[in-house]
Length: 565
Image (cartoon, rainbow, N blue to C red):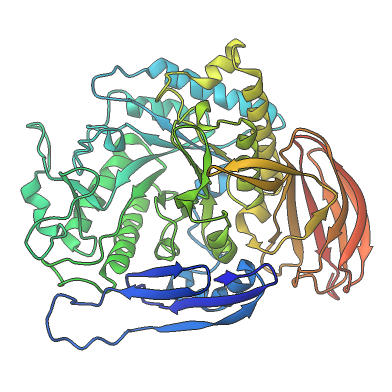
């Protein structure tokens, strides 16, 4: 969608319920915009075939902004196969850890095959982290979801020679650490596992179970018979539509789950959809269909081992919805200088996928930090901004650093020893407060349908360096989520990430089409609830005087007054 500040917009979408591979292409010269879709037809390498696009396009004009455009698309999208399972509150197989986790993080077990395993520091740091968040998130238990890298035989994503599918046995004492963490009742653990890529150089050792000859027939090849590679000359794209490759990924997944006593697995993937000379002569929807089939088969087998097994993907698209339990969101990335950027540098970050699909898949994350430590934020204030956005946009709060990977510093050991920088101790206390409020509003922030939030008046703006350009952002970040199933209760999360207290002087509901009946408005703070009043159905503006302190997070809660209530 392209729209002006006055709300005049152009809309362009594909209505492809079969998930064919495609690319949207946009170009502009300052005066005109061109929009097109590049298709990759089934059997595209077969000469003489007549191609008819197997889905429709929609192009037209609309009035509004990106949310109005998303509303048009959502009406169609939630009727498609990826939403057939229904919203999460209806799932019969919702994994307990997926709901229970209050904070997500990445941990590295071993940084290289030439480096020792810092077992005691890793363990001590995670236990200190548990102590920190339990203390500052309201003296309550904070459940943590730990995503492990550097755990496998050849250190998976940490090492250039990943060795996949030879990920087992895991690194020495890794299973012991997982067992110790699980005994706390706080930690849920998953590991990184690729699904699209195999190591063409295997075997590396005589005890490697798999060799290239076992799975080379399932790779993606170009018309010259050469396999496609990614990242390194020996990391080969694999065809997930091939049952033989699916069987290998399932076998490795289930054995990893069993041997390492895990709760879940995180799958990395990159599609190669243009040409696959060996199996189906290119194009079509083989990648999406094969990918979904692979994950569903993995879940069917893995839940025989652990009924609460969960899986989440590297990607963030429709082909994951309905088969994965959770989805990684990345609205930002920070570069090696600690400057934050919109992810992929494609404009102002917006929660588009969240707005359309928030109630259909659990959402976590929000930023990828290049440096993996505090230098990932040139301006430490921006850590609070990003954390505020992640929380207010309905994602599980994120600790975005990887302690011990680059600097070998273990942040929470420093905190326990009293040596942590004051600015970062305060930043992490702010994150802990967001976790506390996430727990309070979890039903809405996890299950809720994302709505257009009201505008909060009276609060200030701040300037941030976003991708090398100075942008203004509000110091109070706001969202809105309707509780299922009847959506008569709406939680409006709001948090002040700035450096001073703020006062909300008015709430503007004029663009909130969902406010269509009389309602009660209350405020939920970390330790109190306050009624503001009852209002009529045609209320579009409420004057208020609500102080939101520096680092505070609150919920404005609307309860619609219906005949039944």
